[in-house]
Image (cartoon, rainbow, N blue to C red; front, top):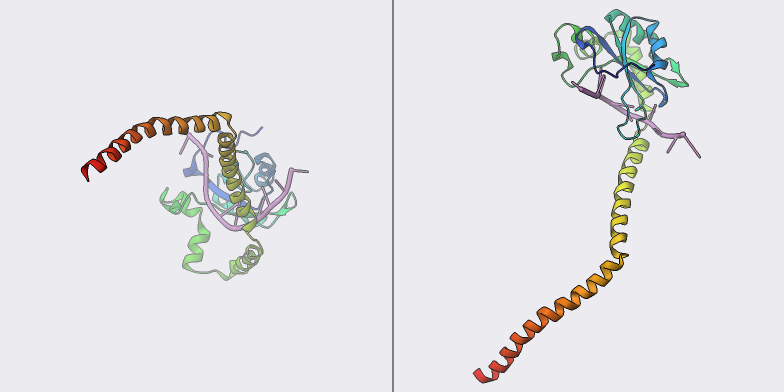
Length: 206
DNA sequence: GTTGAGCGTT
């Protein structure tokens, strides 16, 4: 029953998006919905998936109808263990300029960045430190290596396949030999004629 | 079957 995220963004101007990080790769929107719906009206849940494999990318977007409910969900669900992993819940933004979407709704849905860049509140600072420590523990080399390896493997296999099919093709060796032979014969005879003319004419001219 | 930083489909 995953009708979430199937028909595009419904009405962003009236919703408050939450970014849920560190979820399991097999956690679906239906798994998150009952958990997040307990703290407010969830209008949409979207989990970005890989284009090729269709697997979850490990994070989700939960859209709430009201900002206070979204804030409450952040407070209650950030750091909670879901499916064996500690999830990270925070307000999401569409891009580098998410505040320009609609002055009012979306801007109010990003109180953390504004508060952090303007003035730090000691009430939330201890949580930032906690999250910072959590982030420092993570390493990103594994997934990146896998991605590069996959890309290189695919390219290498393609290259190998093409190269092998060409060198192993009997047409290639036969055609190459025949072609070179013909080429040598045809152009050789003509150039030999020219050379003969030159050689014959050379002593005459000298 | 694996993985683990990050900001999203029309």
